[in-house]
Length: 352
Image (cartoon, one colour):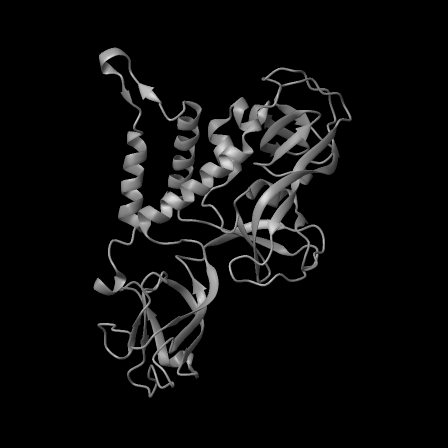
């Protein structure tokens, strides 16, 4: 995995919640990668942020005033440095603009302040004469994602996190720790140091799990007791309210004192999307990047349809007899149309 997905393996499993999902991680991951590609193809844009330096020829046949640079598919969130002809242009001498006039990312073009002396070009060649270092993508929307619970050097790929991160993060998530971005490629179980404080029967209506300390867990986190996975839905004091037999695991009885595990060790791809791997101290905050809601929902829907079609050898039908027809996923068609309307690039930005 070299880029993040717009939803996670865990969200797909939560939607399906069937026994097959416990054995289908690789299949789900393939469906998610395909779904992300489908979103890119539909909208003609990439949504996640990438730190990069990109260059343009000048004037390169751009049908624009000499003080305007169209970025085409290289939408910008922010600029760190603008260079032309080997000279850095002062940030006060340029502005970022959008074709629809809104003053927020993603920016489609860059304009020099015509009241200043700044100008594009001026180098020995027109090739790659304008260089922009910045954050490219749709938007950099982040939410708190817990903390890391160990110090990291610049090469470790196993990251221990707290309960809040365990609940918020999944395989496919894009995270930021200090200035470094990482992509979650796997998760493994870690002993929480907690035990259950009462016996549990093998019944679905036994959903109250007493523990040593409820503060050691987070709502939305998956826990493992013996061989049964459970989803923590709510926490009341030192009691967890759970959904039993989660992710296709078998329901089973558990005795007082059984250890509680949670997927709090993340396997990550370091220095992702143009950032640099660095050391981090224990307790460093984790920020999780969020895709736009409809984009996230479409990626989830595309993956679900792919999985369900795969189970039927891509021959899923609805009805019977003369009324039998291919299951076309009409709701998915509607969702694609909504996402294209709200987030698709409908034409070359400079033609708008």
